[in-house]
Length: 386
Image (cartoon, rainbow, N blue to C red; front, side, top):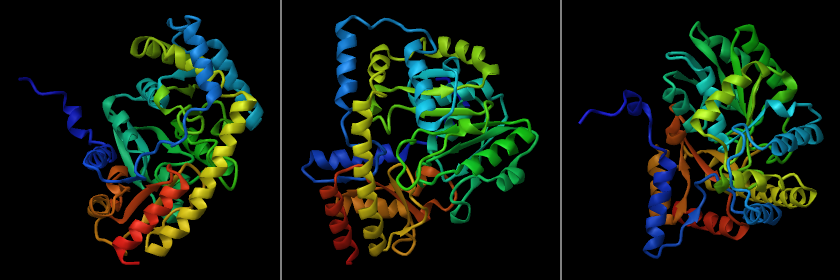
């Protein structure tokens, strides 16, 4: 048979999902596994959001919406930017999408020519480089470390940018490190990409989940930036598959054509559900849960450090701890496998997040309750003899 497209050879498997499958297989045999591998909140979707979906379905609101999303939801998102960030974003620039993945698909489909290059932090969210490759672009992994707070900088852009570079993609808070970009850092990155006639895409899907300071939005740095967000993380709607993309005015028609052809429209019940995400009752629930996540972080970070997992990045946001495990093992993938098989603790090896010293790092997600985190620490301590 004729082989599949050549690009598929460059699409790596998502190792954390394979690790999850192994963990589930062990559970099916009766093993108890503490899950700290997958980036999904353990809280159920807040009840007001669920009720809104049920009411919409009961009322027959299950037909296609406009390709760019329900007008009232686009306006609600614009209102949220105004109330939370003090930033005015016209609702017409907000495109509702099938999750943040749908937003990334639209942005990169709009901006990526064959062989154009995109600068991405390494380590970083693994699917980003594959989105670029699917559109025949070239993802450029830029090594970052503690000295850069695991983020791209103007100096790194200057070093890696060339004539084929279309732009850069950054995330704040970042996966897997939990680091943030300040307002000043976002502004300097925006200036650096503008000076090169490039694009800056900013992944803000973990906004709302910061613990020591608020996350500034990149939209305050100019109306020529592309911003991706999601209802999955802070709003705890992972399975609803709903997100949004803030598009510079110039590109709105191009993005609309792509949305019409690639997706038709986002999920109608999910959009009606999301209208309740910004209600005071819902936000009160979400803020209480953010406080719980902070408590988990503040417990787990020093507990892991005592076991020899040195915190490599300042965990300012999201729900991850990016740990240097080189004092415990030569290879984090082997270590993660052994922790799962022998200790019953599932964590994600650095291999998933890039090529820059992946064997040195391991990611722990604090997306399970306090008692389970304590159980995980006890199991790790026994396994390591600590």
